[in-house]
Image (cartoon, rainbow, N blue to C red; front, top):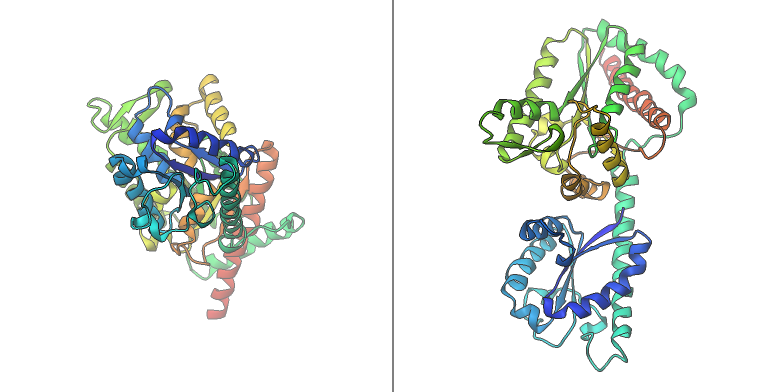
Length: 419
C-alpha cells in the first residue's frame, strides 16, 4: 500500500511545490507514495471538505515553510493546527520542509525534525542549486517512507495477523471430519459457543461472496450443531433509508437505486441493531454453536468498531478482503450494468468510493488495531481478491477450515479439561 502524503503550502510557493513533486515522482511511479495537495481538487467538489478528508487520511504531512505560509491564516491557523493534532496523537508524521528564510523555530513546528539537512532553506545560497536541496529532501523523505512501509508490513504480517494462515489445505479433509466430532462434543456437554467474524473490505471487494461461501462450506460439515448467520450492516441501513424515503430527512437518493447518508446518527442505530440481532439469535437459535458472519460496509471501519461494545468485540475475528481499488470500482459498476443491484450487491457511486471508502486499507486498519483495541485472542486475516473466483474460494475455505476449526478445537480442549 502506498504511503499517503498531504502537502500544506501557501500558493505563493507553488513553483517550489512543483519542483518538489518532480523529485518525489520516482516514489510515485514505484507505488510507494500517493501525494496530494489542493490543486488535485476537481471541479464540482467542495474544496474545504475535500481538504479535510485528505488531511485526515494522510500518514505523512509535509509543511512547506515560508514567510507566506506563516502569514496565511488558513495555512498556519487551520491546516497546520490540524496537522500537529494528528502528529501528537500518533496518527501522522509531520515534516517541515523549509523553503525560504523565516522565523519558524518558535512555532509548534520548532520541535520537529525539518528538511533539508540542518533545516537550511531550499532557496539558501548554501546549496549549489535548488535541485541539490530538493534531492536532500527526497533522500530524507525516503527514509521516513521506508520506515512507515516496514512498520506497516510488520504490523500486518506479524503483530496483528496473530492467526496468519499457513498453506495446510492438504489437512482439510481430516479437519472437516473432525469438525463434526467437535460440534457433537459441544452439544453433548450442553455447552453453547458463540463465534463472531467481521468481514471487512470496500464495496466490490468480495465480502458478501466470501460470507456466502463460508456459510455454504460449513453447512456441509456442521450437521445440526452449528448455525451460521450472515449479518450485513447495509441491510439495516437500507431499511432505515426506506423508512425515510417519504420525508428524506436522513438520506437522499443517488443514481441506480443508491443513497447518501445526510444524518450520521443513522450509523449509531445500525451498529446498535447489529448487536441486538446477534443477541437475539444467540438466545433463540437451537444449535449449540452459533457463528455470526458480520459484513461491515461502512466507509470507515475504525468508526464502526468504535461504536460496538467491548464485550461484543471480545473474541471476535477479522477477515479483511483486500482488493485493488480499480477492481472494486469495475465490479460495482458491473452490478448496475447487469441489473444485479440488491441488498447483497448494492451500488455505490464512483466518487463516493474514491473519496470515502478507499481510506479503509490495511495500513489504516493496522493503525487502529495496533493501538490495542483488539487483543492477541482476536485473529486478523487478510485475503487478496485480485484473481479468479476459484482463488478466492480456495482462500476462504482455507480460512473456514483452519481458523474456525482451530478456534472450536481450542475451546473444546478447554471444555474437556474442565470436565
